[in-house]
Amino acid sequence: MFKHEKLNLLIFIVLVALQLLGVIGLMTRFQLSYLPIMLTLFFWGGMSTTLYLHRYLTHRGFEMREWLKFLFANGSAVVLAGDPVTWVGDHRYHHVKSDTDEDIHSPLHGFPYAHMMWLIRKPPGFRERSKRYAADVRKIWYCRLWQHSWLYILPHLAVAITLYFTLGLAGMLWCLYVPMLVIYNVTWSVNSICHMPKLGYRSFDTSDHSRNNFWVGVAGFGEGYHNNHHAQPRCAAHGLRWWEFDLTRYVIWVLEKFGLAWQVVWPAKVSLATGLRPVHTSHPVSVAAATFGATRSL
Image 1 (cartoon, helix red, strand yellow):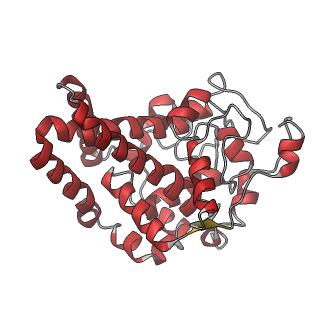
Image 2 (tube, one colour):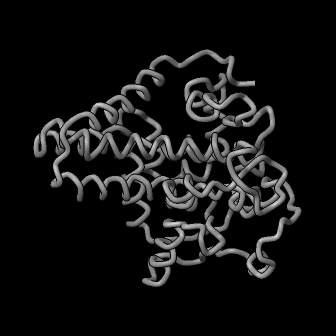
């Protein structure tokens, strides 16, 4: 449905350029002194995507301190993960239309489209639709401001310039753009790989094509256990079996223990007690709509 839409050339050039910077970084000489900064930015940017944009802001799987929200929101801006309003609106729409012809990033439209091309081939009016689905997010002042691209890129530019003048070009590429290259493609793999029938396993009989993929789960801080997520969208944990390593789950658990997070939606006991036997569930929208006040009037 969407893959024949007009290509947004500017966004395409930006996405390709950002990834090329990461690839170029891999070709430059690595210094051990880069490692702590690189891992810190990878963790900050990754958690800002999985913990903040996805599990908190989109699905409201828990509540947390305001300063933490702002910290993670800035992390998502540093790695240019996508302005929160658009990110949340697009993902909520995906849950409503998951693996139908109207799904914004389903492999039904082809792997390249599901992985990245959906970002640059959105139909006219889709941005306005995303705003409606994320009406609650637009009430947050910095999320509303970051709908303006020239404001949204300021945290990224601040970090990039600082790294350039302290570590040089190679240091900037290794510490910022290599982590971004990984974060982008692992995040996109959840949309593509984790919705392809032969590239994962299912623990729940959901009405979409979602799959759990162990390797995407590990690399994506737990996001790759996507069938688990579609079965229980609000759940703060995506990895449910002991071997489904979910780093985001453990971070949320630590925050809860220190009183920095509360009202955490942990896995339903019945799912764990039954050994995760395949269960018939209603379409994710029935669960998601109860969470997203913005979608009720759509």
